[in-house]
Image (cartoon, rainbow, N blue to C red; front, side):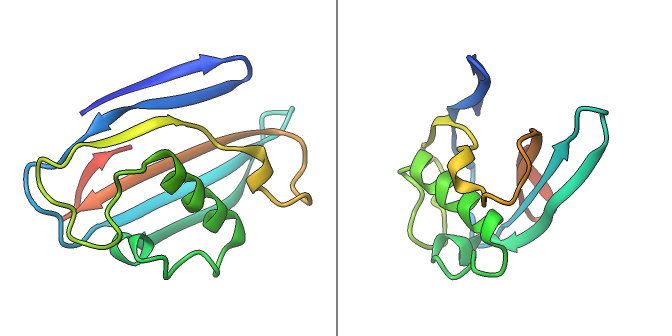
Length: 129
């Protein structure tokens, strides 16, 4: 796995490749986002763990519109994601300059800085975070 964090203007983007050494029949996606206020306080926007196979099959996202937007964005930046499980071993998955697009967030969120984490877990082992 090779991942790079690139800074372009005010945005940070992730670019890289990853693959698995064995077929992945089930996995979880863990994600959370915080608003970071000017005074340094952090407020949770969402903190969620979902079934990764259900995500691939487009059966999630309606329960949390912000997270649904984030996951739709992930699919746009990872075109090789399969439509369903399993994710085949040695299948190269490319992350093409992923970033959080402010247009995917609802207008009621304040204009502020955000901190976000997305992690993949299979059999209790992080794939990346």
